[in-house]
Amino acid sequence: MKRLVLLGGGHAHLGVLADLAERPLVGWDVHLVSPYRRQIYSGMLPGWVAGHYPIESCAIALDRLARNARARFHETAGRALNAADNEISCADGTRLNFDLLSIDTGPLPATDLLPGSLEHALPIRPIEAFVAAWPGLVDRMLSRCRRFDLVVLGAGAAGVELAFAARHRATVDGWSHVRITLVGSGAMPLEDAPPCARRQVARLLSQRGVTWLGDRRALGFAAGRIDFDQGPSQGFDACLVVTGTAAPAWPRAAGLATDEHGFIRVGPTLQSVSHPQVFAAGDVAAYPDERPKSGVYAVKAGPVLAGNLRAVCEGCTPRAWTPQKRALYLISTGNRHALAAWGPWSIGGDWVWKWKNRIDRGFVRRFGTTA
Image (cartoon, rainbow, N blue to C red; front, side):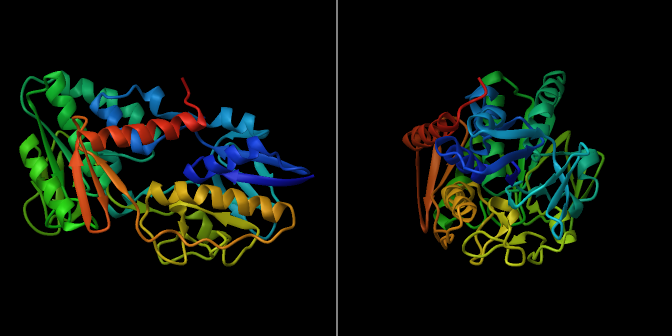
C-alpha cells in the first residue's frame, strides 16, 4: 500500500482532511504529523485575548479530523527530510517513508533576526506556546499596582489586532494601570493595507488609548528593553513579538528548491519545483506569483491541494492554480468592531465585526471544535 504523509496541521491541510473524510483514498495509507492535537485558528486568537471567546471555540481538533479521514495521527513535529529516500524524521524518533508528501507546517517566528526575543519577550508563534503563556502574563499584570507597560512589536494585521484586543480586555476588566504601545517599522500601522485603512487604524489607536510608535526597526532585546536602529530604546514590562515570519531550515537542508528566505518553491500545481513527489501550501510555500504570508491564501489553497493530491494518487494530472491577487481582510479592533479592507477600499463598523465573527465561527464549526 502506498503512503501519503501530511506534514503539519495548517489551514490548507484542514481542507485536505475534510476531502479525505468524504472520499477516502483507495490503496493509500494516510498519516498526519503535527506537534499539537488541535489547531488554534489564528483569525480568532485576538478575540480570545479580548475576552470574546473561550479558547475551545477557537480550536479545531486535528486528531478528530484525522480519525474522520481514516488517517493515522502522529503528535510530533517533522525535523528532517531525506528527499532522496522519501523519508521524514520526526522529533519523537519516528521515521516515516512516503510515496507522496504534503507540507503545511506554517511559518516560524523570525526570532533569529531579533537577538534576545526568546529570553525577554513573548513571540506570538507558535500559537500554542503563546496561549499557554498568556494567562501567566495576565496574572503578572493583575499582581502589579503601579503602571505596567505592555508593548506589541509588529504593526501588521496580527499586531494591530492584538494591540486592540489587549486594550479592550484592559478596559473591560479594569486594568487601568496597563499602558499599551504598538511599535512598527513604518510611519503608520498596518503596512501593505490601503492608505484609508491605515489612517482609520491610526485614528482608532489614538481614540482607544493605544500609543503608536512608528519608524522603529527593532535590532534586539535586553531585559525590559527593545533597541532600534535609530531613536531611543523602548522600555517594557512585557512585550508581544508579532513581527515577520521565517522558514524552517530543514527544507533547504533536504535539497528542496527554496526562495531566498528558505520557503519551499512550488509551481502552479503546488508541487515542489525540484521534487514533484512533494507538495507544499500555506505560509511555508513560496508561490510562483508572490503573495503575502496570510491565512487567507492558505485557506484558499486547501481545496486545490486536496484535489491535486487526489489526482496524483489516482494517476491523473493535477491542475494549475493561481492565487487571487486581492484578498479581503477583516481586522478586529477590540470592542466588537472591525475594519474591512479590499484593494484600495476600507470600511469599518460593528456590522463588520459581526460579519467577521460569523465567518470565523463558521470556519471553525465546519471542521469541528475541540469542545
